[in-house]
Image (cartoon, rainbow, N blue to C red; front, side, top):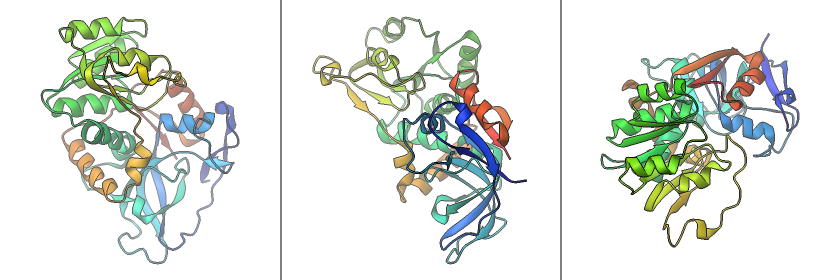
Length: 324
């Protein structure tokens, strides 16, 4: 039987419940996708916790997936049943065996990229594209700090930044994860949440600090990240896996530090109809160069709550997939 995982209200993973999911008929401009694999992301957890409130509950979470077009609605001419596609971004609704999607959100998959790889990398890959090309154009002379360098997003960022010629300092929560980050190409890895990160970065950069830091940890880590960046450097805050970020005063950024702080959104980035398809093609080219997140684990779709709990607790590396 086809299933969907519904969020019945904000809170813990017990608020996720399985429900029947009979295939729906696409409306004008819509397609119906039957999923082969569905990506699990921190943004799903933020929706579940209510950090990003959803207007109507119950709601089906999930913002990326891949497999085939099963049916098309009136006016859909670019896709047909049997086409292999992937997608990332709004609207939510991926935690389901099948779902409806506006045709413009579906990106046709090249024959040489599997649906599993696509589902594990679409959202994270678009996030990496945004961070490395739009927020701060990374180049061979760039030194950057990447938190959680063994995670799904971190592993893509490390590999892509190294392809661009940058020097990468990563962080990892354990020696095992540090070894994974080094395997992805990180030049240096700081291990443990209690490490004196700013001192390590200063030692590695001759007292200057990094040019650019990407912080998906949030909580009290963001303030520590700011201390790792050189004057006139940039910090991108892209998540809060460790919890909400305490308020920051403008004086935290300058004038003494003279820092730029960005809070970019991949949902906004992927919502741009000109940016989204072009960035997806850049991502497919990167995947062909083995710039991918490893698939850390598969979970049956019915075990979406366990997948989120494992991700939230930091027990995973790479990307996690739900399999209908």
